[in-house]
Image (cartoon, rainbow over all chains, first blue to last red):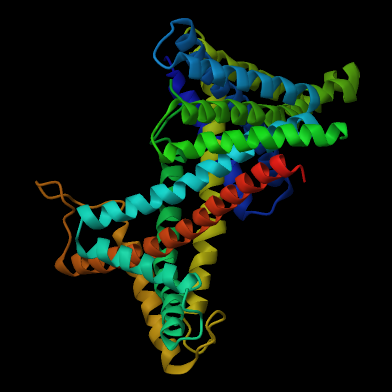
Length: 211
Length: 239
């Protein structure tokens, strides 16, 4: 009888996942050590998978440059920045002065500036929501956001007025009671979703590793 | 001027130019912004690769060859710690070519299986159990609220709001439900109302999160503008 290879991979995934999951709930030396070995292998494989992803990124942009497709100069910049950072990082290490210099003077300012742009994008998105979708949920969302913003920052009129204190108290009540309840529900819902997705893989219902 | 301060000065100029290039997006999507973004993706991915190499791959796969020597590598104890990982890594590397990618399935299956187990274990022990316990503890009206300090009737009201918020938001996430022919979830009228209340709580929560994100990014925008001002003024005044 010919055994389908996909079944072997499914059994490997299920057994490996079963022992790792067991290690969370059973404190036994053998299971603990087996779990550590399996997680160590997975970490190594994840690092290799990262390099495969980087290779894919490089090959996609390399083909854009070689075929001179639209926007190829940007791809050339990406390849150059990637290779320079990677080679310097591999040779000197990520904690070296050279690598840290690249990080502090190139990566950090761009990342911070992109986050700064997000302030404008968020404000524009908020205005668009109010102008395009005027239902109860949008009004609650925007009203809550305005109240929290008003209650968080300082006012030009100062912080002595009773209205300012009232807004601050309402803000605290919204954040600590209403939003806490909602956030807890969201976190529990996300965790249940993660458990469900994980269990589908552990029970071999979903097999994203191919055949 | 010392060598370090020259590097610092050049670095500050580069950082200031890159900041202006990114912020130029506020006028319009332009080539300066794209240049900076592609540069960022290249540098960030290269840096991530070097961290993965120095922190994971080199200590796990390369260093044992030098520390253990040939005798250590041929020892039976290194089968699990060195030989199997190397075979798995080589197998995963076969993913590069479409011709050989089918031979990488075992490595991928192990990675996915262990990853799924870590996700399930982490979600249960790190979120579900602690959050449920925290909900039960905070829902006790006898307990004083740690953040607001209120007790008595006020506390009971707040506890009820939190309870309704948690349950209705959770009931909004339905992982299995029948659908009507129009494609909508088939719910009883009561569950429909609970779902609407849940959506309202989600709107409040997202409103709070939106305000928090907006405040944080405005602070970062102010910091970037202040950095630009400091960089330009120090260039002209030399201080």
